[in-house]
Length: 171
Length: 443
Ligand SMILES: [Zn+2]
Ligand SMILES: [Zn+2]
Image 1 (cartoon, rainbow over the protein chains, first blue to last red):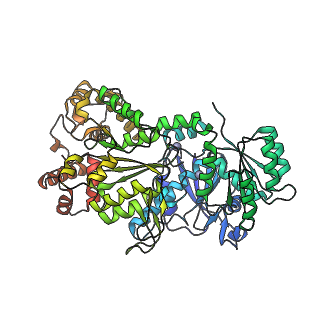
Image 2: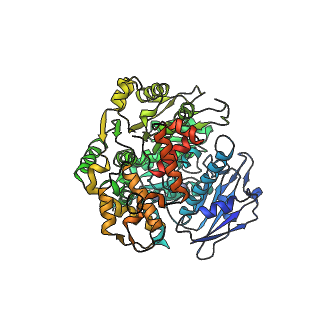
Image 3: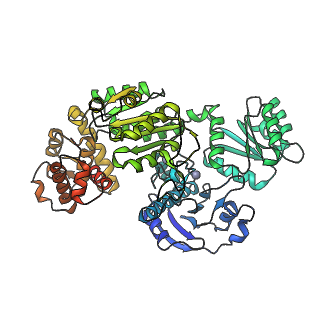
C-alpha cells in the first residue's frame, strides 16, 4: 500500500517527509503532496474549531493502491465530541490527522521529537482505520485508543502482530 | 464466535448520528443509526440492540417516551441519554425511569468511551470476543514460556495472581524479562482492556520522577508550560508497572504509599484531588529486604508492594530455555533485517549453551541481533558471538568500542551509574539507555 501525505495548509518544514520515512509495514511507498482545502467551509464559529467530518470530505477519493492522509494544524472536533486528534473513513483509505492537541508540555529539541513521534503514531493510527482496522487492546499498538496526548506516548508508531496480520490479509 | 456489542445512535441531527457512528465503529462495535423514535423502535424490534444512545430532544417521539417504549420492547437494553445543558433536568427524569446514565453534549471523548465501555461490559460479549483473545495471546510474549520447569513455576504464579487485584513484586537480575511478566499479569487480568503503563524509576532524577508519576499543573515549576497527566493517572482502570522500584527516593516512596493506600492523588502544583483505580506491579533487581534493613527503603512501603512476590530465575539456571529463545530471536531479527538465515551451527549452539549470560535474556537477544548483522551465510556461526571465536578486540565497530569503554568505566566506578555518567560526560538517562542497549547489568 502506498501513502500520500497531503499538507492541508502550512506544514512545518520536513515534517511530512519525516513522518513518511517512519511509516511501518505494510506501507511500502509514498509521496508528499499539497491539497488546497477550504477551512472556512468547515469552521464552526461558536466552537472556534474545524469540523473534521466536513474537512475529510474535501480529501478526494484515492486511486487503487493508495491511501490519502491529510495533515493539519487546526483544532478538529466531531459533532457531539469536544475534540479529536484525527478522523478517517473506516476502510475508505482516507484520513486526517491534526497536531493541534499533540504538542507536548515544554519546548526544546526533546519536545520537538516527542511531537514528531506523536504525529507519526497518530498517522499510523488513522491510516489503520482508513485500511479498516478498529481499536486494539494491545497497549503499545498504534491502533490502541488514546484520548490524551500523553497517552499517545505509550504506543509505538507500528502495528502489533495481530493488527499487521489483519492489514496484510486485506491487501 | 460471539457477536460484537450492538449500539444504536438515535438523534434527529444527521451529522451527530454519523459522527458518533464513526467513533463507535472505530471502537469495534456494531453500530446502527436512527433519525427518530419511530425508526429506533423498528430497528430494535428488527435487529435487537444492546446499547441505545438517545437524544432527549427530538421532534415527534422524544427521548423519554422512546425510553419507556424500549423498556417494554427490550427490557435488557441499556439506554444512555444525550442531552444539551438546557435539558439536564429531563435527563435526570430519564435516570429515575431507568436510564443507565446521561451525557451532556459536546462529549469529552474520554467520558463517552468510558461510559459506553462500562455499559458494554454488562453484556460481557466484548470480553469473550475471540479476536480480542487472539490479540492478547499475540501480545503475551512467547519467549518467556518456552517450557522449562523454572519458568513453568513463574507462569503458575502469574495465573494465580493475575485475576486478583493484589500488588505484585517481581524480583530478578537485570534482563530476566520482568517487564514481560508484568505485561502478562496485565493481559491475564480483568483490567486487560484498560491501559498498561510503564515507568522506569531508576532512570529519572527525583523531581522528574515525581512529575512523571503524579503529573503537574501549569507553572508548577520552571519549565512546566502546561498541564501534564502523570503515569498513575493514565493507568486508571488498568495496570501501573514501576520498574526499578528499589531506586525510588524515600520522598517519592512516601507519596506512592499514600496513593496506593488512598487511591487518590494531587498533581504537582495542583489542588484538585483525582481518584485513581489501578493495579500496581513493581519490579527490582535489588534485594529489597536488605535495602530495608540498611534503612534505604521504607518498610511500610515494602510491606505494601510485596503482597505477592514472583522471583524470576537468571538465564544460567534455566539453560534448557536457551535454544528456544535463540530460535525466537533469530526469527525476529532475521525478519526485521530481511535476512534468510536457517539456524545455528553446532558450534554456535554449543557456545550459546555454555556462556553464563550475566545479562540474561536481554543479553541473549543482543547477541543474536549482532550475529544476524554479522552473518553473511545462511547459518549463524560461533565466530559471530563476541564471547566465542576470535577475540572481541577484532571487532572495531564504533558500537563495540563504545560498549567496551562503557563496561570499563562502570567497572572502574564500581557500577555507580551517576559517577560513571559524569566520567563519560553523558547524562544518567543516556547511560541507562546505553546499558540497556548493550545488555550491561549492575552486579
Ligand atoms: Zn482511533
Ligand atoms: Zn494491534
